[in-house]
Image (cartoon, rainbow, N blue to C red; front, side, top):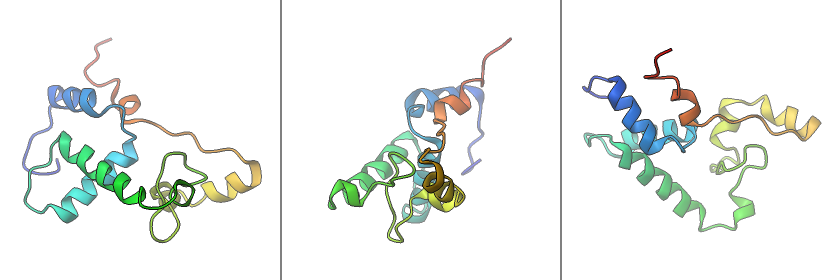
Length: 119
């Protein structure tokens, strides 16, 4: 529970349908940004897309090669030169430098697919 709402299977299925294409860590980043910058405003699916759009627009002010993480494809570098995934998983950098292999990424849709399905 993020605010005073109860999380139900139908709500999870709706949010997944609307945002299932968004990487889970990006969605968590957007939630965190919303809570830090939009105090008291209700969090909804549009809040995620709005935060991610603002991040993309901010990154668009720099040449693409200066904003994208070379290890975590699609992740934007922060002011410290690391992306969100580099901060969460510092072991990815030495592995990438040693092998050239990028780490596997999971989408929000892949993580929530089993919810609501009956055997």
